[in-house]
Length: 191
Image 1 (cartoon, rainbow, N blue to C red):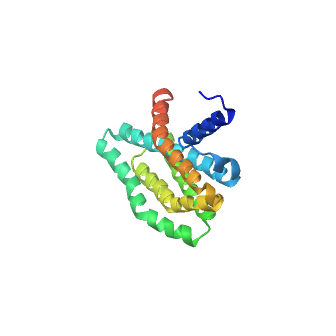
Image 2 (image 1 turned 90 degrees about the vertical axis):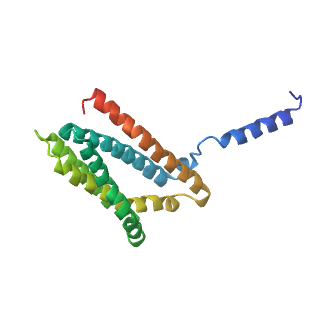
Image 3 (image 1 turned 90 degrees about the horizontal axis):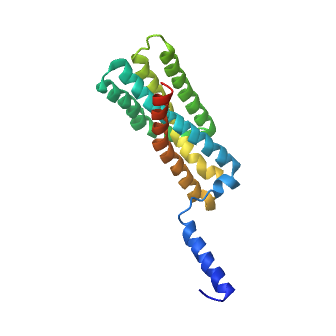
């Protein structure tokens, strides 16, 4: 230990600088209100989508008892992702991104309401699960390009890397947390 206060302060600053490399920079959330709103909204939407994915697979299995049917519902999700994401990128470049995102969210809500209406039936049908899953996935795929391209418009260039890291954390949390929450809902709420 040194007796010089300046050396001790420099050592503390050095430690803080090294430690800060391991801490998520939330500056874009503090300094850019529009990014903060988009980030929170996307986070909630992503977690909800992941919960719905698990609930949909669970409902399909409950209705059919078929793992093949569960696999096909996943395929119904995959096909629009693979085919329409490129189209969505072109749409995001050609039209107002906010409107594209609004259409995306409206499509996803419409598909979710369709799933909820089917689930509320006395004897839910299987075919609407495929149709509404396709609608939700298609809407997501068409709008995801607009979502991803909004970040550079909402934050300063100096905060872009931190904003991208925050977006990544949100996606990863949704991918892991959403199914976990869905499992708890299935177990304790009798979803």
